[in-house]
Length: 321
Image (cartoon, rainbow, N blue to C red):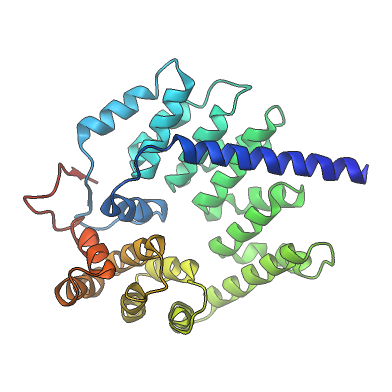
């Protein structure tokens, strides 16, 4: 029985890798930096006054229409396009397109739905994660729930994690959500001798929850971001946490990190999104970067972020959000 469970686990892991590979392969040309910054804010569940995404209404309408195509692959590509650009109004259309039972397409569409970061799809994804007819869909729905990382999904994720479903991904998501109701379960995992990786993820989640429960978590969050200056791994969770707290004390740390040579393009997109979320102080820091180093990677990223709230005559068609 133990060997059989191990074999089933390997098959499930291989299937999941194949699914995610197909998701990536079906994405068309990567969105521009400005679009990715806007999509990041959408996935975080944040709205910014005056925020616009540089995607034409004609393109959005065309891809939404494709979600009704009888060709499942067309629906998958359309959902990927819309989700990667943060078009949240496409959510109902993506949910309705999750048909073709017995194929990988509902799984791929669940992934896109999760990327929109919209709490209203938690119930649908919980139901998909718990169904037993399509194990691939269950795995992808669990991952999508973890992408949304909504407090309303904590009970469902605890149930899934206890049942052994996508435990690593679920444990990481519980740490991102930071709901104290998960502490007892996380502590039981941290104390278990079963799996070292699970113990480490549970301990990290506990540390994050306890940090966010403190009277003032911002100084510690800022310190986590600044560790990148000493060569530590970039802490995207801390950036997101500062952005969601809307605390301008995080602006200097995010601005400094944006200019670090070891920070990747994906990290710079997160930092620029975080600065936009921090209001006037964050916007002013982006302008300062553009003025002082316009041709640097940090400067170009800052300019892309500012284009979302300060479109110029050279900006392509804008869709207000």
